[in-house]
Length: 464
Image (tube, rainbow, N blue to C red; front, side, top):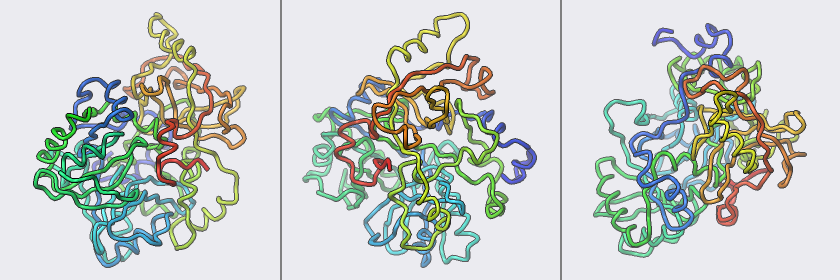
């Protein structure tokens, strides 16, 4: 394809968008800018439950600034969320859907000032906002700050750190010289660290108390070093890319919905606007779930545990479709705890000369941008697994899945179909292997008891 081609032209020329994405040469999301491990990923995982960690998120997520008189109007029209009571100094998880009520993605939306917003996360939701800002006649300006992997200068507009864990508040207190502010969840304030003014969001990536801290890029290293110094006496560990990619297993957030934009006449102009070489045209699908139509990979808000976010108190794209879907049965988000002996059987196949199963990487076993694995009972499809990896805190291999409601109760025995059919696709992350089944038990989401008990209602915890 020529560099100027659109996603729409890529879809037409491929003739098989499912086959194209399943054989894409991209692997899972990259975490550049930080070492794979600062110490070892096992201790780094355990620190977020036992002491405290510093996540450096300055590199792997894109930021989109949205400013102007119509900024709130635009965002409200695109989000399934209610904006009632949303005001400066607050943040929320922002979820846009298509006209047919399928999820495009989700990001964190920050209300920074009058007519000033920032969205942080993966590209699909940001692209959807950019398109409507440019084509919808809104009085807004948007400015995209691309993630490090898609730029050559190594700079960003902002740094972004998270301090999470049982000792997080003590670290913040030591770094600021004052008690950590008693903020409600997803509320913001301003702190002073290393003589710098730092924006702080009350947040919780792993079900533990903590803050997300951000400010101008050039001030980031001074703030980071001050946090490291403050955290020394509280057992704080720096988290590398390997452990970071697995934290969602304990918190229950599914980070990988395929953007539901590859079909539909109403989305044709959007696909013509999107470049063939952008996220949507180069991302990969992996796993044992194979369907002839790309629509089968689309997910509803209820699939992802976002049903509680859907509010019909405002007009937004997808409202009519979601009003219909709200009355229909829904899959439920769950955790699957994989059977230890079955997991060991898969791992031990690495020591065979042939008939090896797909390798289970540690701690994250995700090998595509958008994993989709079949979950079955007696060979019948009853759910989809979308994220898999190992938790040193739980001592188990876990997956995040969405199950048909009648099979979603904790304790239900299921099987995860692990590996791709026919020996695997052409993705470079996929070696030749034999597909197999791994026994599993349906478990709560979040799997971590601390996360279930302490997360604010509506943040990564909803399964209905």
